[in-house]
Image (tube, rainbow over all chains, first blue to last red):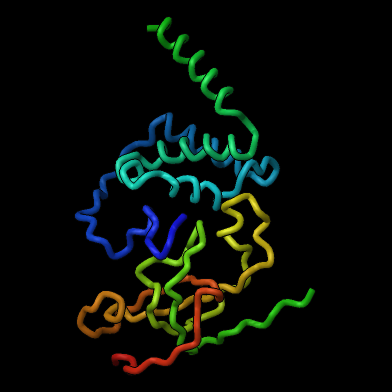
Length: 108
Length: 103
């Protein structure tokens, strides 16, 4: 739990160095993660609210928060929230990842 | 259920509380303890600190647009630049400001 400390995301006023303003084309992964959030937060599905997504992203350790990319943080948060909300279990997610890894290994 | 009236009006001077922050806190660290002026009433909104934990976020909380002087926050030279932040009523206390606005 936070005390009067600032959260990992609350960096206003801290020295941050120059901002990289270069754009890059969105990758398929990024588009898919974005689409997942749009679907899961859609009122008709309502798996979680965008506030919960922010909270789950901000639960990353300071190291992960600053080194992980934007969408990798989102996909981690999605996993955490789906488990919290009993939509999927960690075991189900791990089993599926295992199967996909096997399939990928065969394809290569 | 009738809603409580807004505690502050535009022009009121307020000081942002120093804490304690909620587990999902939307009041930026750099504004805590700072003095600002109510610039407008943004409305009533469900509480994001509760919605972040899958709660309905009720009752709704009053949200204000609060203006801060740049030089108060960052200890820079006095100037016309202002910071505008949306802050919830339970983070604000009534205050007075000692130095008048820079021209």
